[in-house]
Image 1 (cartoon, rainbow, N blue to C red):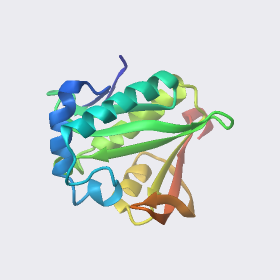
Image 2 (cartoon, rainbow, N blue to C red; image 1 turned 90 degrees about the horizontal axis):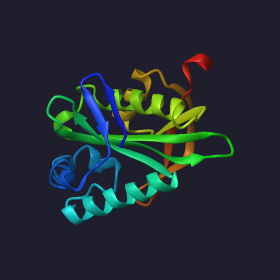
Image 3 (cartoon, rainbow, N blue to C red; image 1 turned 30 degrees about the vertical axis):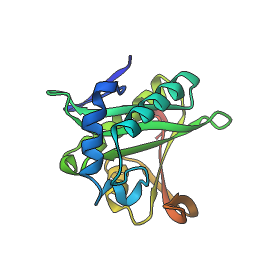
Image 4 (cartoon, rainbow, N blue to C red; image 1 turned 135 degrees about the vertical axis):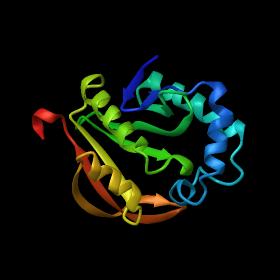
Length: 180
């Protein structure tokens, strides 16, 4: 089971015992996470978390996604989630997404997760490009992308669908250090 460590954070696969803290983080993050991620709704329940954990396990097995929980390394308290998904095998890149519980935001968790996952994408999975795509109005996520050195490439019209509405997004990229 892969464990990635970056700064004071640990990224590891979700286990069923994480469900209560996952639900708690989602329910207490409606104003921030829930604004951008429709799955993070006020009726989120343990059954939703367990179903997500199962989907992430199947996706890891078939190579369609590599999702991790973000935990404080010292206590293993869950503070969010992050993953590599939507792999494009023809052009050898994937998407990197992240969310952090409202109570843990602005403390470096997202940046640590992005750095760890980008390294994992390049060295373990062999990707040559990682994209971070964020809704244009999501300044917090855009700030994370810039903080970790991702290059802003463009604003893409209707690039994301947020709550059923096509939304403009900013596309950022990371490439292995030797190519940067």
